[in-house]
Length: 270
Length: 225
Image (tube, each protein chain N blue to C red):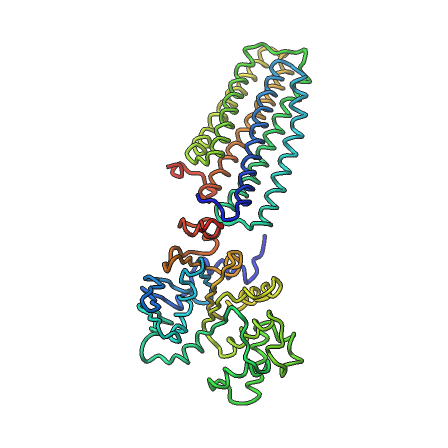
């Protein structure tokens, strides 16, 4: 008889009992000035799973992602309607502290963007300003565990005080992920995290995503169909600002329902 | 369905369909001629069929190579991926059908001077005709991506099975009546068994077609609706 590994068992179980919803979007509409970018999007993000957002350029997937930690607030002409709740609390309520929200919902961008500081300071900055650490040794521990979780510690442990910008692209991106993890977020948003990386660095980030989902809820925007198929458990397909299909990843990539999804993932779009 | 943005991808998929159809055509003709060789004890036809099997083997390897290359180069998804996988499976089944045809053809070498009476051959010819019709319909269903047709063929496999069973009984009766017929009746029995096996491979073809079109493994009557 074949024995399932713990991870396989968890995978089977997670298919049988869907994880509770971490983030829920209800009738989300987004406008940039007069132009509407998202139309009544209803999408639930399950806890401790990877949700991939796919679709052609300009389909609204990044716009939706940015709604989840109110990054769109930084754009003057942007207006968000509808409800987005994190653990059943609407994140657009007036009493929400946006800084705290962004600590709970971290973000990793397309281009690695480490601060122009040392590797250590890149990680230490967040926990320090959020008051998450009491002592220097606490801080050192947070830096080390964050780097370890991001799979970067062994590569940088001897040069923690060198500039973060001196690392390779792939290492910089994992540094950014470590930086996001350092403030103990619940959700990590990733906007095309591998598009500037080579295949080896990409594989390391994907491996990391797979490990991170044990503890974090992850939402990833990607243009690589194969990446979405590899790393996610749930996939949402956007087209012209509409959510056209949502389903478990295995089904979306082998037997999608919507014609637009079929065309897009098989390379027949446009 | 729309064309791919990358035209070469379409060409490669079309080529795959053409290869499978070509293999199907060869297998069809091999089976038909193998039974002719057996019935008319024509060694020449039998040898031609045996030689043709090599061609079918080579084509199956070509399909294998093409599918592997397609997966490596294009990373097909959804319908495209299922088409590639279906081609891989169908090539295997068609190659097996060819093998069974070759087995029948080989029997023609052994019963040359021992022609069975015509009435014994009628049942076998009928079983052959039905099997070939099924094979042709399955290949048409593949070329036309016709789910209804594939389902119809799949459901008709019972017909081949019952024809085989009745032929088996008939041959058994002859052998009991006249033990001198045992040798060639046994050959005919193996031949009938091979045709019955061909029927099974035809149902596999239908299942692959069903998977290619619907993404489901399970063949159901409702799927055709």
